[in-house]
Image 1 (cartoon, helix red, strand yellow):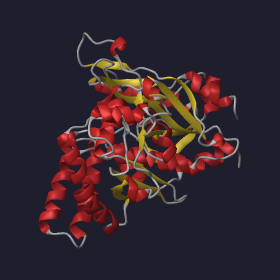
Image 2 (cartoon, rainbow, N blue to C red):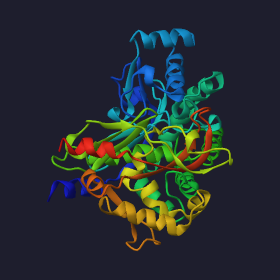
Image 3 (cartoon, rainbow, N blue to C red):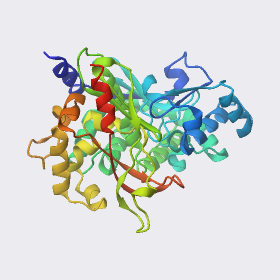
Image 4 (cartoon, helix red, strand yellow):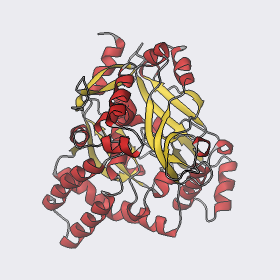
Length: 409
């Protein structure tokens, strides 16, 4: 088999399984307390945007490395804190993608390769919280500690009871129920909650009060795209399992830090190929907003596109297309455009509205360069001023990333 065929087969047969929710230190015992992960390629403190800056300071305070924000910033500027790209440590890193040693993370293991990947979970009533949007305050701190100390062990027990949750199967079901599984996960969240509930009901060693408290927490999360973060970890586990195939140009990472956007390809392993981060286009919540208000892409959730979901599965989500001011036919056309830069179609991710029947998958840098078409990434539009969401739409991976990658194949 040729290199791209080998990498494509590894990607599309990947079987990511959600197996636990544990602290970063429990998953990676050698992870130092002064290391903080963030989304996108490596980035210097001076170039970081608000969510990263706030999140890193929050993580330092959460780890009790400093007592005040000023002291935390001083530690960063003095080089006493190790800031690293989350993808380099197998983290899915949605949004700001902040993770530190004591924070709980979702743990996914790819069954064929044994690759383990993580992602911070949605933080319940705190929404994206510290892990997602860099928000830190006493309520977030208390919530993070409750997740790590109370809910994470209960989730792990429930998952162990049912043998984990096979995420690709779960997401495949969600696609047939109207989700693209990047911006919209309405059905998939409910499917996840149903499976998790069975584990909670069957597990031993928990009191009735603990079960009910956990189920209430999980149910509240199922309205906040909890499964999106599971997808982020699962995409990384699947993509890493397809990495390091010599000569392959299959894309194994799509990540942004608000300053630069970076990709990785299978044939060159963990090397980044970067360009200025793209901004969003789409439908804005208020008429006064324009593309000039859009913030550059920040987050690694775009890895789900490299897995074959989100922008590569637009035809599965007519409600999302309508929200963007488009139609199902636009979604079909988008998928067919993406198919032009993919090795093939995913045998797991069926989309009945597509002529080919399945979502395209296996983005090839060689095809993106040759056809001058780049991946279309789904996501919420954030304001470059406030950081809050002002619409919903898409961004394109910079063409320069593929130019740089192909110079090294």
